Length: 624
Ligand SMILES: Nc1ccn([C@@H]2O[C@H](COP(=O)(O)O)[C@@H](O)[C@H]2O)c(=O)n1
Ligand SMILES: [Zn+2]
Ligand SMILES: [Zn+2]
Image (cartoon, rainbow, N blue to C red; front, side, top):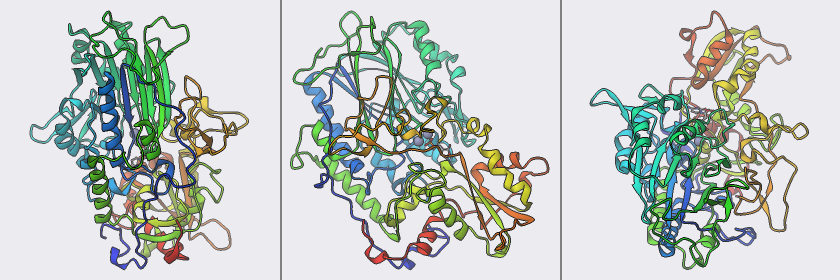
């Protein structure tokens, strides 16, 4: 099998065409930011869970900026901060690949995307769980990425095996103590949630153990003054999210620093969120997939509580004015905003026009992305999808939902071992393996990775009694699953609304049906966080969102008369092997498991053949 799976090399694709990037600012684009940003003494731009979406969203104008546009924006904003006499810190909280062809279409994830990602002058970065699933990727982070960033790469609780010494070593720095250009003395910790799905090339130290480490306690007891703690990490900011360990670490900091401000920046749960912990500790989470750029600003520093030497209230712009909590006695005031990732947003907040905006550095990065896309042939069209299919905007059984609409027919048709084609089969998968909606129109090589980015091998157990095999899905979806894969797609209980059903994490705390509609408002994020509903920089109407289960099942080659077979081949991703064996129960062991088609046929390999099989109508003239 080649880079493009087991269905023939790319030059056998009959309908090859590049999808053109949609131009931002098209006539229907009446939406845009609602007001200038509030600039404080220290300000933050925050990215998280970018998952390789450096090209931006080619099919969604509202998130259409690419990484080059962001390079320009980040540089312009740093200059603005400098001109105003305040600080701006750029922070990333991990999950850099698994989600897009730019990061995943190379033999090893990230080979082409990481150099593009590096073009931002980040002040602080940290590791995500997606950097630790695959051993080679973990080594890449340790040997190359962390080295490039030096002490800005902070991994307070993650170690990787140093192949030269045979010892586990921190990937980056355990913590970073630094002074900002305007004199703020900052202590930063970068904490990954208690992730357990890592390969054996890494070790994730649980937060409860990390806070007992001597380096951590020495950092907190240090005689060096600290004006601001930054607690950042691939870790949800919502304290009620069972995956989040921030509160534990925050409490440990508070034990010795009762009043010092703590700025939290998080990720992993793919939502926009803002959490208030106490009078001078707040946290922002900035979504996923280059849809959101997070903004925070903080003021309240003076000579009595800091070394800040900049401008107290930057002129000509609004300043933050909101205490973390009503009635707070803390001097610190804040603002938070979730920016939509498009050029209109970037132009507006940098006070530029289409003609004046671009920097050479940004244009060069845009050029690099185009080159990578061309080299990887990401624009090649394999089919013409007849309609939109989404992960959770329609009920799980609706034909508009991607599972019944695409995934079941695709795996039923394509995931087939010719030598066992007469056997009935049940195919099981985790819904978290399907990462994004599929849009009507050209289905490209890139879309293959956007929908199914993982290299999870299709395994099987032969001839499982139907009664046993058919009971597994229900067991996977019952109770225990939520604990096995904390914070994947299962919303927490607080998101349950008895009349409206469950919310997904896209708009996790906004009940469906409550839509703030205005003229010119387009569907998108309608975020509700600890401060209410005014955090979105661009107003949107809500997108419906339904609860989906943790696992799905497709069936193929069942008896035509509608009866059930005595036995089936039970097929599943290697990612869920241990759970499937557990749910099959006694008598089922790992030595009964084999590769189904072959040991390189993975979840990256079924969508392209399906597009070639099912979506050839209008393929030569497929409208975007
Ligand atoms: N090989 C893999 C790895 C991960 N997944 C799915 O991704 C989820 C985690 O993604 P985040 O961006 O939220 O960190 C994980 O829970 C799985 O659902 C997978 O399917 N295969
Ligand atoms: Zn993620
Ligand atoms: Zn993650």
